[in-house]
Image 1 (cartoon, rainbow, N blue to C red):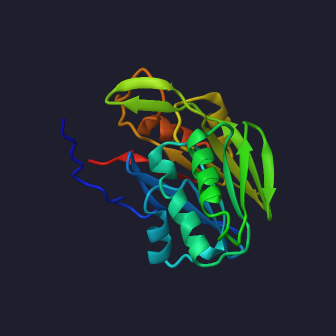
Image 2 (tube, rainbow, N blue to C red):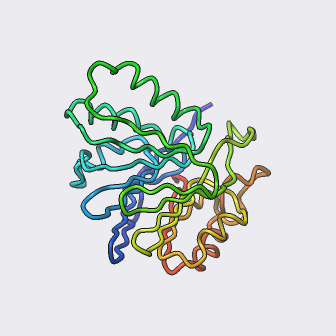
Image 3 (tube, helix red, strand yellow):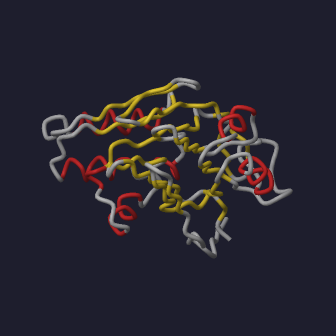
Length: 243
């Protein structure tokens, strides 16, 4: 079986600026990698750590040492592949400030990566990795950001075969009253629609074209994503398939 991707690049730059927060989609192609960066008071918060995150931060002028927190929506490789690289870079550079890694509760991929990294480098690390596991509707405060998890509907697909659901969440990030919502990967569900409604910015996945889907309901199609996005003040569509 062969697979070809004609285009790996994201065709349009996606950026938004509010009063106290700026958001940029570093890269997002379904099945390849997704990473979104949020700048708040000269510190960075990353939404998903897809492969190439470290490279993309450096080449776009973002200092990885100013990264405050990484928020993982679920454990699939295209959303977590760069976590080891980021942690390793910080160790190499002698970071001392703690790093927050926020994930869904029982996200096995994140648990293994973080624990094995800490175990392997326990005698040569100068910073602490604080792993915060969230369940839907749980809120944590990091600096001046209130981060609330909401339930999403996602699971695995292998060669068209539908696998069971995986631990997955979206994030509502409140920065001084400005609300940024990140859906991660998800099918259509009430919790996602409720989170997006009224947001200053909603970052919404749209893997499928209109009429293209399967019985899993693990992703949104473009028309549904745009319909939901219009309930926010501003929205971005990400996680499109390579063509």
